[in-house]
Image 1: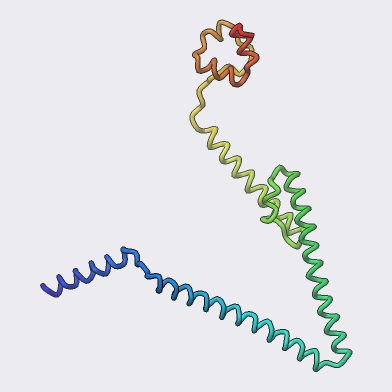
Image 2: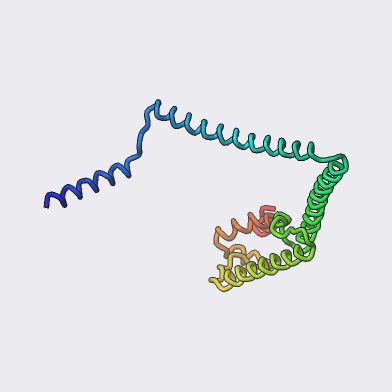
Length: 192
């Protein structure tokens, strides 16, 4: 029985320790900050070291090549750079085209990042998919709202209100008329 009581007390003590926030002394905070700073500095140093090793490896590779191999290697590097720039340019052109297509279809140009692709066919497929999904979503929401309770009639839809109808209106409707059509209100109230 004493063992069960001791276990319950230990469990309660552990739960209390878990729920109460731990407070740190100023020295402990400094120590934690120093550890985090050291960790980040060592990660940055490792990253810089990897970069420098890659450059050294590249320089060693170039040093071992003869002139023709160096020329061929540099040519390949330039071709890769040109190819990367061409991809960037094509992506920018596709983004501009996609923005225009979205605007033509009545969709926000902010959605361009969702549909842009390197391939024009793939991009158009993305635009068509987005367009149909967006319109289906809007249609569903409109149908949902139309199926809800019909709003109360506040004012006649036509602006041909007689003075008798105006006088019979509650003040709230007259105030609404004043907000929506002040000229008609003045005419009907005789203040204009």
